[in-house]
Amino acid sequence: MSQNFGREANLRGSLLMVAAMAGFAVEDMFLKSAALQMPTGEVISLFGLGGMVIFALLTRLRGEAVLPPALLSRPMLVRSGFEITGRLFYALAITLTPLSVASAILQATPLVVVAGAAVFFGEVVGWRRWAAIVAGFCGVLLIIRPGWDGFDALSILTVIGLIGFAGRDLATRAAPPALSNMQLGVVGFAMLTIAGLIILVVNGDYRVPGGAGLIRVAAATVVGVAAYTALTAAMRTGEVSAVTPFRYTRLLFALILGAVVFGERPDALTLIGSAIVVGSGIYVLTQSRRVIR
Image (cartoon, rainbow, N blue to C red; front, side, top):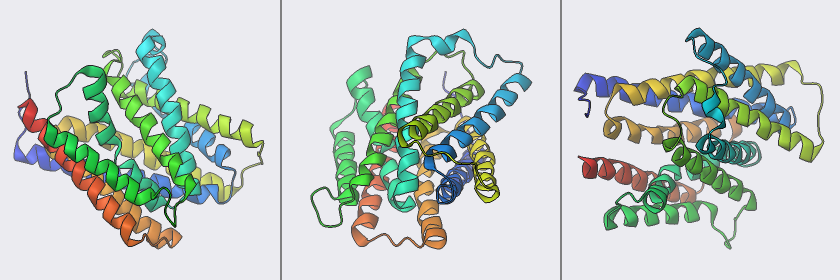
């Protein structure tokens, strides 16, 4: 049975979503800043460990098992593999490439999820949404510009990361419904810890973290957990069709933080590509909701 939400609930949900996206952009900013002072793998593993501990405590406060047997189910193992891929490559992307560019490419994730749902779950995707998906992918190509002057091969890191996140979201649909968002949060940050350790092993670069770097990682952890909580509340407060499009405000916050904190100045093609990706994503998400109704 569908749940009916009023205008006030949709407004609250939308504001919570905006707050969550602002939090995620600030989290990325702190992680990128920390990576300027500490090895990237160290930053990511400490961030993952901190988030995992916080979510484990929240899980226990809810009277739930931190590591239930359902975590070892096949869908969850597949989800964990995609989670590691997504978090590993996106974490590398935000530390090695401009924050605004990485955030812009990441906005194509919902398009990949919808396309994957059609291919793997047999969901009906009409020609209009397929056209929007193709347009969104063209927007991504405008941002990364393969084969053009100004092409940065490191931008492929974000593309691999968004494929990992899309795979994670698709695998979540098949995950045991008994798992709570807090338990999934524990798993998510645990996978981030593993991703950071992978980078440490590959690079072989470890040093005793300094105070400033640790403060930035701690700030990213607190803000990240708060953003995740706001995201969960948003999806449970208003209609999906009303709330989900506000995910794209993350790009706006990333552009502002990238310019103010890191002095980034995206060029015209990046801005045009970003607009195409965002517009395509909003169309696909809202059109999908109309089809369901």
